[in-house]
Picture 1 (cartoon, helix red, strand yellow):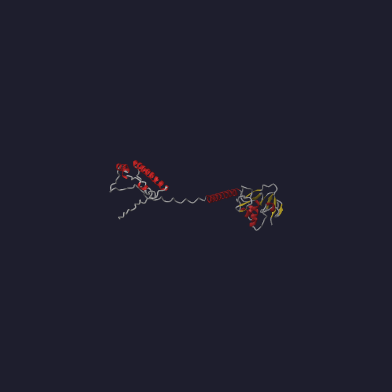
Picture 2 (picture 1 turned 90 degrees about the vertical axis):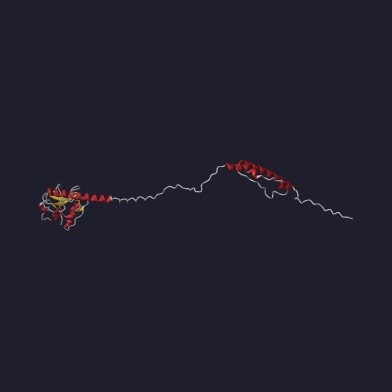
Length: 268
């Protein structure tokens, strides 16, 4: 009795088909179609060639075998034709590149300006001019006073009279209100200064000097006595003369008695 041995046939193992795998297969086919269309459009425009590759996770089983091959040579033919017809730009090996740079030259800076001159002290100069003018005026006044004194000679009574000799030294001194020195005197300043040279102190004002001595009559008056009238005082020079500082604009001088009824005052 013979035995027949029959081997069982087995189907090749295949991935089980599920709704998920069927959806993936359909999507792969659509993406392949879209990729081929995109590649053809890009190649015909001469701009680029692109190949779309699906992820390995998408190409499974039968869906991977269903993708058709893409002829890249045909797709890039148009682009290659454009590149071949484009002009070729080349540069010789011995070409030299130059750069035009502006010429720069150093210029020596100009010397600094000289320092400004110091300001002129006009105030000091004006003061100096004023002093010079005052000195000239004083000299002119003294000259005029000397001329007046020569025209109005000193009375004989001055000789030997201590008060009149001192008073005569200041002939020509200008009248200065409130003055009591050789630079300027008023009437009472003149009489007090003259008597002070002889060691006799008189009050400063004419009204006070009116009561500083003894009143004498005109007949009894002697050269050197004071001669007073309201608001004014001088020194009697004998006869019809007196010496005093008259008023502003005048100088110390000998002149005739002008008061109608003066008061004579003896000091000491």
